[in-house]
Length: 178
Image (cartoon, rainbow, N blue to C red; front, side):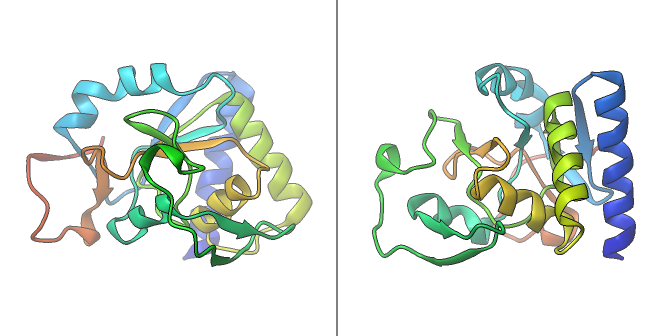
């Protein structure tokens, strides 16, 4: 269950922090698209050097969150969205045509963590404990400004998704991440 997912991720972050090497991390049910295979390095090149993590996936039901500003509480949880709908480039999450600051509330089948990010996540986990599913907690910390998280813009092509979330609206070739 969730404790096992946390333990697995904690072990990965410890390894990244110890080795000082950034790493891709995939959930066991992750699929990556041709876009991931062809463009992942150019996407990461555009991610700010200060990043703690990058998510190659945004769940379809979270993509509209890009256009709203969330009110984030001190503990990292968030309240209702503001009523102000932002346009593409006026969104508080806009970075460039492919990249945004993390705006979703969950879901990370394909992630990229930096050593600095792994250390920051481990520190936050020690300080606050495990209070939410790991993906919810990571994005809550990012939305609260405690982590520098980035993700795909909502209009970007799909790079990765959860196998169990595949719908008939998805197109293209998909591959097991190994």
